Image (cartoon, rainbow, N blue to C red):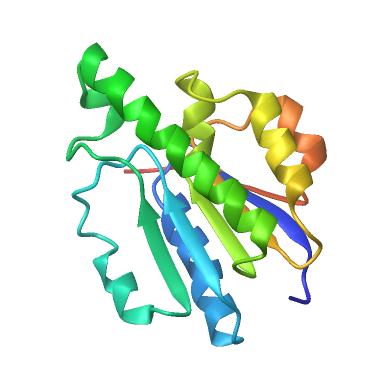
Length: 162
């Protein structure tokens, strides 16, 4: 891939996932392979089911098993779901290590830090795993200051009116 970039879309506004998917569609249009891994959204989201029509250029994976979003789960359900989310991060690591795609999106991965499922250091190590031909896109509500030196492009999405 021509661009070698780590990109972040963050903020409390709507549209972070949509912006990341826009990058995916652009990459797929250029003939690149794309993998999107979604976290913390529940497994019952029909909003992005249209992406299945874009396979094999764009592949979508979700490791959540609950139909509810993470913060709506009981403590017991959250503990069970954490295992699934960690499996998702392990899968993402394998994707990076094996060069399985040109563009990798980790949707809501920054939320995993907020919930204490992974650490900032885990994300830094993950970013450092990438080979030069990856476009790595991270999304979430909050971007820890410690990640900023490891990121090439940052877009804050905020609601102004609404």
